[in-house]
Image (cartoon, rainbow, N blue to C red):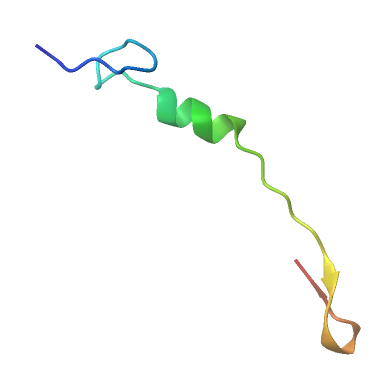
Length: 41
C-alpha cells in the first residue's frame, strides 16, 4: 500500500504540499546603491 502524506492525506505520488508551499512563498527584491552610486538588486 502507498504511503499517505500526513499533511494533505493524498498518496505520496499525488502529494502537492511542496508545490502549494512554493506558490505561497513570497520573495522580496530591493535595490541598493553601492559603491560609486551603482544600483544593485
